[in-house]
Image (cartoon, rainbow, N blue to C red):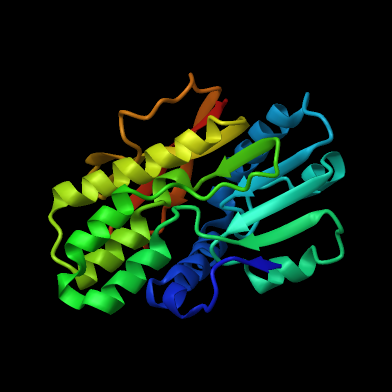
Length: 257
């Protein structure tokens, strides 16, 4: 495994590792409800790779590989590069024997570690330095791949960063909106530089016990996206763990670049 991030302490401080474990725990609770979404995601990736040649492919946000047709990918492509900020040891062990599957630990936002370092250096005075660093950052891209897949990660790029910043600095919501806009736009920019498949949740739908539904947009309007190839509903949390006394669903869309 190639580690481009150095020591793990800052990832722990920003809760990347515990968040990844939380994904698995939610999957265990909601396994039956997730299957349709996971299968739809895999099928859209398989449809997209159908006419692709035997080159290199990179997957951003590979994680637990729940939504990635990994066997089909490594059987079809010369090399499969799996990119995540933290790879579960179980997943690494399971595919360690596959010679053309490569695990790379990298921060696809391009700014998380710098944010941590600036706050360590400047403390409560870090706000202007952090904002500048984020808005000048460029997304990490693995350049030795002809094809790219981004799987259920676009809407999450800013989530843990914003949570960490809320706990450390006094930013207002306008700054957080700018951060989200920038990180998502950078990710779309890198996908547009090669042939790519993007699958992302775009809207969160939360229904309460009394039947009211709240919709929250998860991606910004200004993104330069092609027409979606497909869309579906992901039954994300129907047991009320994510938000008490609410069922949470996601509207998901698949795009081909």
